[in-house]
Length: 271
Length: 160
Image 1 (spheres, chains in turn brown, cyan):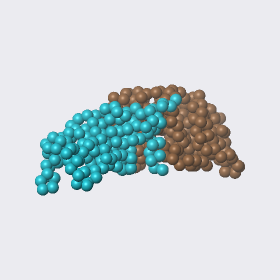
Image 2 (image 1 turned 180 degrees about the vertical axis):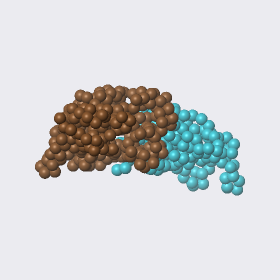
Image 3 (image 1 turned 90 degrees about the vertical axis):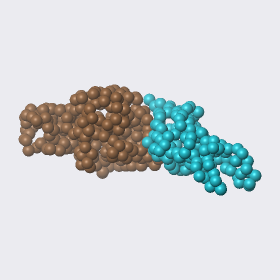
Image 4 (image 1 turned 180 degrees about the horizontal axis):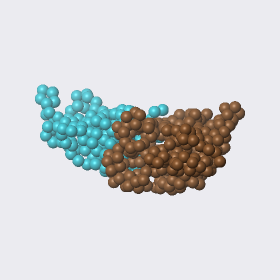
């Protein structure tokens, strides 16, 4: 059994980056590949994201409008461009992207009526959905707050169960980036009703943009199984937690220390 | 599963000036009345509502402006001393300020009062039957904006 040391833990949650994923990257840059444009990529990626056997998302069918994104940050930026920096809200302990630019979280219970909420699920800090997720949704319903979900972490998660049929949930996005594909950010956005925003323009005004990105994405999902992280590294995740007195979480590359703070284990367990 | 309609939010800001009787506004979409009331001073009035719009169908947003009689416009020596006017301040459809659409795609059909209109005609003044992008309404009449759904596609079509 591989021995781990405390020095291998990181304050950042680096993704799994192993020989297999590096080999795919090498093949992508050194071998010929077919062109896969967005019309082919969308159903392919849609099937791939839905094929998780470790998580349960109910109600995909309500989200009939599917578009390509340049990853979940594109989803966030499109959302912010639509509603304005002061026209949207986030919860505390969100993706650092918001806080670094001065957008601070609003506590559940204090959410502003009629102001859309963007939320990361699972949340990195908790490595799970929010404990009070159902009450957050109820608050959003009572205050007429539309909810948009950033599922960036879902590709490396297990045991996440979300009912997407809730009427306040208007859109969500997923991406491939968490499998060390940050060098080729690509993903999908699903929404109940398409509106004019950056992603809509990207998909429906200028045709066949970023086909290098979708071609690479198609190559990766043809080679990486949807639950690759947990299928490959479940034992490693449990072993490092046992050896270093950490608590396993629902994210393959994150454990919790004895103060319930997240620590990165992605670099340590990758082989 | 994709719906064959969309639920779209309309936000309409209207302004007015009057000294006696207020203008009366009715807002309709596809002949369905969404708002009807007298305008108030001094603030800009915001009206918002949702409407289900069937895809691939023509739709019509109409604002009927009424409530102006001859007595509401006081003229002396060919100068207007007091008047009643209403106007569109801004319209936002599905989160998009449609100012450019209003300029290019909307029209106002004035209901000119008699005998003033006949007098104008006799004097050789040709009154416009349809004022393209007319958003300041000195006369009663109907302002209209035609569009189709999905609304985001309509916006793209208007760009080309």
